[in-house]
Image 1: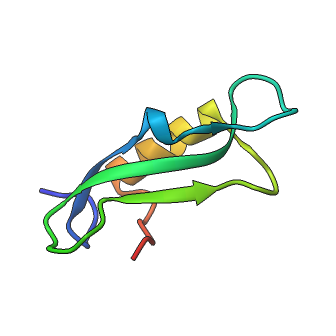
Image 2: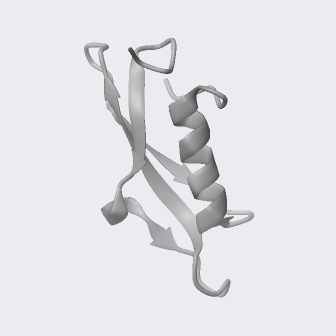
Length: 78
């Protein structure tokens, strides 16, 4: 059973869709592609998420993916 009401589950980061933020040291990203499984026809099953103003750390990214998978963070991608 999917964790999200819109029929999506198994959120994960596409390692090929990650852009390292320059000038912030290691483990900070300016853009991340999130993938998921879907039961909805026509769902694109991914989203590119920019972090232009404030790059996201690896630990923050792990926390977001965990929250999406356990349902504590609502998926807002259409």
